[in-house]
Image (cartoon, rainbow, N blue to C red; front, side, top):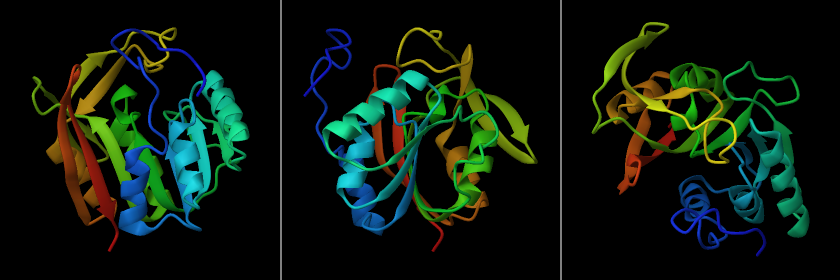
Amino acid sequence: MFGAPYSRSKRSSAQPMPDYRAGILDSEFGLKGRAVLEAGCFEGNHTVGLAQSGALVTAFDGRVENVVKTQVRCSFFAIKANIVYWNAETQKPGYIADRFDLLHHVGVLYHLSKPIAHLASLLPLIETGVLLDTHVADDMETQVDTFQGLEYRYANFREAGREPPFAGLTPSAQWIHSEDLLSTIRYFGFKNARIIEDRSEPNGKRVCIIASRN
């Protein structure tokens, strides 16, 4: 274990490794030998767990410091993974492959100002399945927006700025209604998309979604 608590109320104790959501992805699809794209590696907790289960991990983050932290943690565990910088609201860089078996997407979507555009760029890269864990706008006052003909409900959420490590990189983010999030995932070919976990957290409602193309 390394690092320190962020505060008395947030990340005040060590996270379990591997995170249980890596286990969900493994039980649903099998991780051994799979090419996995991990969105938002943060400090490498998920990266290590995925790789320890046999996945071939490409992990990215929009904060350079998180890329470095993840590289350090993987080194401590003798884990080999491709850990790179990418701000997920920009065009995919050429050093990230065009095809992956699985997508591990935890704690990122609700920090994005254009989450549907982000999914539209990411989901076509994935051939088999997705695990997506995010806050949703089900219990919030929503507005309606469209992206390439896709209509969706969202709520604006103000981000805390660049300095706090848990904040997004834009002044505000869109939280999507869970029904419209499922519809978007299905639109991009993952017909079997379902919520497997629905929970309340201090900032609001959060869901975990599993989706597959078959």
